[in-house]
Image 1: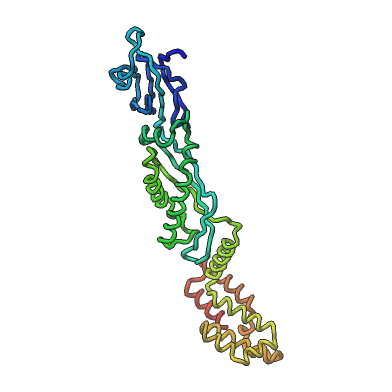
Image 2: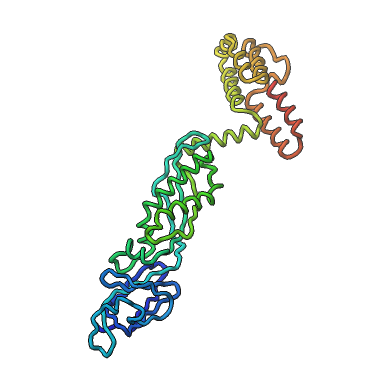
Length: 341
C-alpha cells in the first residue's frame, strides 16, 4: 500500500472511537486532529499520545516510538506502520434509558405491592481516551454511543432500580407521590453510576429521570386508585369511612324488616352507636320505631330521611360551602343536624 501523507477524521457525534483504515505512515505524514478529538498512534501495543487539536508531523522529535524503528534509505524520511486511533471527546446527551421490567416494591404509605417503571435520558463523554481505548474498544475498528450504552446497560439498570427503591423506602413517600423527588433521585443515580464506570475512562455528564410511574391496568394500582378516589369523595362531603359503613348497615337493616327487627332487638344498634359516636347512634335509634311498627308515622319529619337523601343533602351542603354560600360553621351545624336526625 502507498504511504499516507495526511491522516484526518471528520467523524460524527455518535461515533466515539475510530481507527484510520491504513497503517502505512512515515515521518512526513501529517496528523490532523479536530478541536473535539484526541488521537493516538499504536504500535506493538504501545500507545503514543494523546495528540490534541492541531496539525502534527510524525517525526522522531515528537514520537519516541519512531526513533526506535530501523531507518530505511528513503531520503532521510522513515516509513513505518502504526495504527492511528481517534477518540471523540464531545458529550453525547441523547442516550435514552428505561427499566426493561417493572420494579416490584411495597408502597411505604399504603402497604400494597406496586410495579414501578422509570424512564429517562443521560449523557456520556470520554474522560480518559487511552483508558477507554484499552479497556473497552480493544481491536474493534470503531465504537459508537449505542454500543457503549449497551455495554453499561446492566450496571445502569441495577443502580437505577436500587437507588429508586432506597429513596422511596427512606423518604416514606408513596410511589404515586415520588415524582416530586425526581431531581434528587437523578443526582443520586448519577453519582452512583459515575463511580462504577470511571475505571473505563467514561463519565456521566448528566442523568435525568423523566418519569416514575405505575401501569394503569395493574390490578393493585386500580384498587389503590379507587380507594383513594373514594376517600376523596368522603372528605368532600365531610364524613368518615366508619360513618359510610354505618350508613350501609342502616340501609340494609331498613330494607330487611325481620332481620332489622332482630338486629335492633339484640342490641346491635347500641353497640354500633357506641363505636362510631352519638350521631350514628341517634340515627340507628330512629330506625327502630320504623321497623317495629310500620303503621305508626315517625315522630318528626327528619327521622324518616333515607340514606340516599342524607348523602345527597350532604353533597349539596358541601357544594354550598365550596361556593361560599355557607360558612364552615353553618356547614358543620347543618351536617351535625343531618347526621343526628
